[in-house]
Each structure stands twice: as structure tokens, then as C-alpha cells.
Length: 154
Image 1 (cartoon, rainbow, N blue to C red):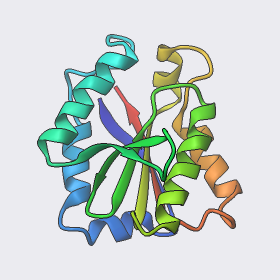
Image 2: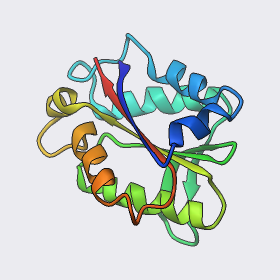
Image 3: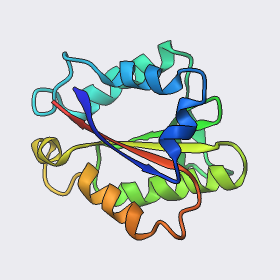
């Protein structure tokens, strides 16, 4: 697994690069030749990635307000959603990150999704990079939190 594409809404990537090598840390976590879409089930990939984020000191299962909603990881005011599920969940991820941004819990949001081909290896109607980045561009004038979309491929 490796990063193959990024979309930086409101200069999210530039802002992330100012946060003490956090972007390099994320790139290191996501670059893993032992994890391939199609070979591993989504849950296996999530468990491996969760473990890698935790070893680097990222908090996990961050609650959004007083709800049962959570994002996957948080460190240094950067919130991360790792989405290998249905495409509809990406909209919830945008809203959760926006809410945390509005409450000053985070300054930058990141949504990590598979690229188009890898998404199809997981199944029908899974989250994928091209669709998410296009929709964030489309709604860019109302999404006021810097969000970095990261696309993963084999």
C-alpha cells in the first residue's frame, strides 16, 4: 500500500507540513508493502493501520461532541478519518471533521481512502479518492476546514 494521490483543500497539505514532520509520519504509516487491497480484507488493513498510528502516539476513537460518532486518530490538532467503508460514510467524515474544527479540537482534517481500482477490489460502492476529492471541490465554498484527501493504491 502506498500514497498515490492527494487533494489539498484550503492548503491543508502546506499547513500539515508546518506541524513537526506529521505528514512524513503519516506517509511512513501508510506506506506498507505487506498491506494490499484485494489480498487483505478492509478490517485487517484497518487493524494494521490503527496499530501503526497508535505506536506513533496518535490518540484513537476521538469522540465528536456528546455523540457516539468518532474519528479514527488525533495528534497535534490534526484529525484523521481512515475510510475503507461505504462511500456514504465519507460525507459523515467531512461533517465530523468540520465539527471538530469548529470546536477548535483540530486545525486540519485528513481523510484517507483507497483509489478507484483499489476501492473496486474491496467491493461495490466503497469510498474512493476520485469521487471524494471531486465532491470536496464541488462543495469547497462551504467546507471551511483545511482537509487533505489521501488516495491509497497497491
